[in-house]
Image 1 (tube, rainbow, N blue to C red):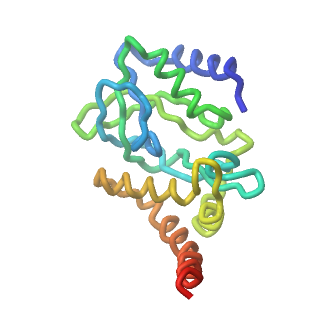
Image 2 (cartoon, rainbow, N blue to C red; image 1 turned 180 degrees about the vertical axis):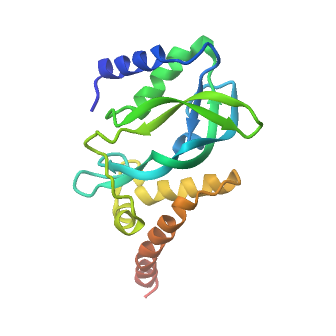
Amino acid sequence: MWSSEQRAASLAATLACRPDEGPVWIFGYGSLMWNPALEYEESATGTLPGWHRAFCLRLTAGRGTACQPGRMLALKEGGRTTGVAYRLPEATLDQELELLWKREMITGCYLPTWCKLELDDGRTVNALVFIMDPRHSLYESDTRAAIIAPLIAAASGPLGTNAQYLFSLEQELNKLGMRDPTLDELISAVRALQAPQSDANWQLGFA
């Protein structure tokens, strides 16, 4: 777990690399899409070139435990990712980013990175993106559906099940008219693993 001092140092270092005086955008590709918990002045859908979604973060809290870890979403190099960008107000920028760091940088597993983001309305903006740090101890390089689907199907914690997160992501992408082919096999595999359990519960309840 990162201390408040570590988070503050990370935020300061990130802001020191701010590419220009233009507005700060945050790119959401996971739960930030349906639960941004940010005060923002504008939101827009867009595409991040050069990165793709991957459940490459070992999840030991929230929707998983140390005894039965799941997998959380991050970004790995290559491909493209669609999502939602939020333009933050300059007047409250520091406060909003402090809250965002508390949410995203609990373990310091991400590299907050300034990236060029292509908005669907034709604009190109500089956005902060939370990319997986491959040097972090929670990084998992093997993201094949056959490997991670059983983990996601089984993991749960105080915030709910790991599978609920995956299905919420699917639902939000569908709502926005977005499709991420990298997730299709994983979603199908997790559903297939959970189907026998659902059938067993039904039979138990109506026997």
